[in-house]
Amino acid sequence: MSGLVVSGVLVALGFPLAQENVAEIEQVKANLYVITGGGGNTAALVADDGVVLVDTKNPGWGSAILDKVQTVTDKPITHIINTHTHGDHVGSNIDFSLPVEVVAHANTKSNMEKMEAFQSASGQRYLPSRTYDDRLTLLDGNDQIDLYHFGAGHTSGDTIVVFSGLGVAHTGDLFAWKGVPYIDVNNGGSGVQYPKTLLTAADSIPGVDMVIPGHSPVMTWDDFREFGEFNRDFLTSVERGKAAGKTAAETAASLDLPARYANYAMSRGTLTSAEDNATKIYAELDR
Ligand SMILES: [Zn+2]
Image (cartoon, rainbow, N blue to C red):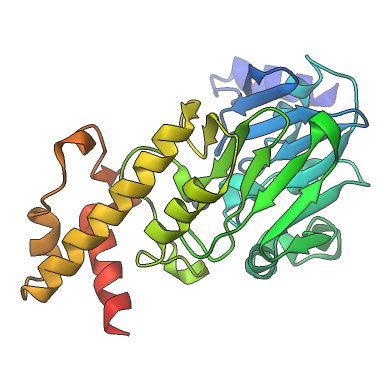
């Protein structure tokens, strides 16, 4: 109650109210939903025994996620799968009631252990309690979820979460948008391995038709495969530029990519650009 009074005073004095975090929810297929806003896309599978979340957005978005989950079910959150270590995907792990099983790739657990949010005794309880290396199956029947890791890409610990009973995958930021990806070399990301990781996934994972990307509206598995091909062609073009003696900047300015990628963004704000990625690939090729 005192909070309301304080807010009232601030409003009276002309200060804006703190913006409340509000997410949006949309049904993807059957008992699977995507919750948008506040960072990376969150998926929510309403399984028999509870709700499985994939990713938890930026810090402070736990109650916004829970508010939307509770519009479709009153079951508790039983699992959180973190696709990778970034704060806009693991940031609100600590908001959820225990017990909750946190699942991630082993490398993502190692990366998360370095994050400020998971240093305290209470924060450590939200680190992954279950990890895997190549493949892990959770739940069964229509609720079956398969986690896949095919190598480095966006980070060293990217998981593709497949809702096998539904034919839907959440790709995290391994596939965040149609455009140059962010390669987090400090967390083990690799521009050289990235295309192979994507195309191996496209060739190996059966039965998926819909994709929840890390930061874009729902797309198709063909879009995911095309993104792998884009990264393959980008890498080939960069390797060619380097072999021809061009600088990374010159190479990035003269990429000869097929016309079918005309709708791919060559930069993403200040986060990344073709030149950033060419520079990272040059450095990797020189190692
Ligand atoms: Zn990320």
